[in-house]
Image 1 (cartoon, rainbow, N blue to C red):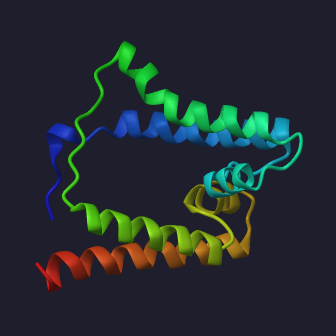
Image 2: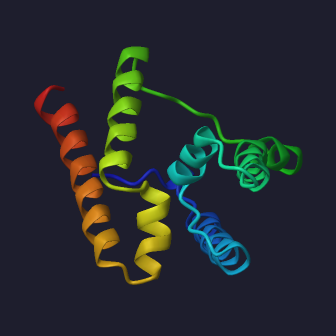
Length: 143
């Protein structure tokens, strides 16, 4: 394994992690809710009365943040080394996993672990292990 030192950004990554943790903590403090994206989006699709505005605002902020960031700094180039079919299957598997796991990476990995949730610890270990096994299998066994 080698590290791409030209794209290694520990300070930017640390700042991003701090901002994600701060945002999740503030969201819980002011809304009393976990900042799990699948739960926020899923709740929006269920159309609960009086619960739509903050969900829409959250998702608009999530989608709108990169263009706003792009105003002050260049956005990194994105390279996806997978075909459309692979991305569709991967997206469906992630969606199914979030339903069975009662939450997504942000809900379990960021918010649940910080609350000391054993269920989130198990869920995070499961999806991280599945990710490691998938990458290893696709890159090293299937080339």
